[in-house]
Amino acid sequence: ELNKKTKKVINGTITAINDATVTIKTDDNKEFEVTIDDTITKMFSASVDGTEELLQKDLKKGDYIITTGPVIEDQVSANLLYKQAHYLVLQGQITSVDKDAFTVSILTQAKDQYTLDIETSTKQSLLNTKDLSLSKAGFSKYKVGDTIHTVILKPKEGTEKATAIRIVIVPQEFFTSETLSPSKPAAEDL
Image (cartoon, helix red, strand yellow):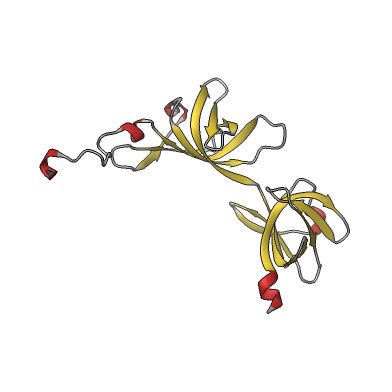
């Protein structure tokens, strides 16, 4: 019963590696010591291509991990441990477009600024403001003032650019379009 109540999922960046433990720091700056037991802990590297088993020697300082197991205060006894890329999901407004560098600067609702590097592998979509469908987009569709929803690889400290994985562009017209505005009823509805 106690084991069921204390099992949690903890995720963070590895700050130190010792014999049978790794220390991680979460996004809210809490530190946890994760104990790895060769007979109990199953470890995997996770990506969009699937998972691969890994060993403790494959873990490095700076890796992002997700682990589950009993947690008592700041101690985790890892049952499962996944190493994966650290993704962030952001929403913001485009503040500048650099057509030479293929970058877009955004300001999030939390007032954080990011410069997104648009790669050839970045999946880009544009919202159709008339029927709300999504279509493929290219770099020419980015406009200052448009809203953007994106998944990025979390940039390392001191890095200017973040690699964009997926993007949905919502044109300004979506917020000003009268065809979708519920405030004015059509003449035939009166």
